Image (cartoon, rainbow, N blue to C red; front, top):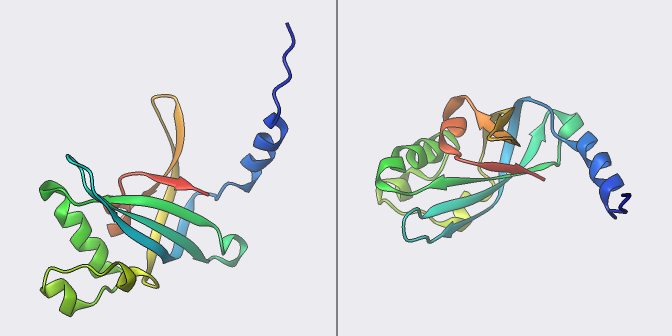
Length: 134
């Protein structure tokens, strides 16, 4: 039996647009707190600044705010240059996150048969629990 599935050809083309593995300088493009009963988190969207051949591409990720994961959030804020005065007051201003920049090392991984890009290494790699390349 032969089936026609629209969009299949475009999906194959988009695989060529994937961001390669490597180290990238990124800038925070958007951030927002998402409340969840068991795992509240910050959703953060980054845009690649360097290297130039992939500049402008985006990556989104989560940084969880559970008591066990609070150190990851703290490392992310310090490494990306968040305002130390607000950090000292234990306050996070979503608008103050926008424009912060730092380094992400991304690698391609397969878990449970699902292909994904995961930032790894350095503070950001430890902080981001999941990401989606756009």
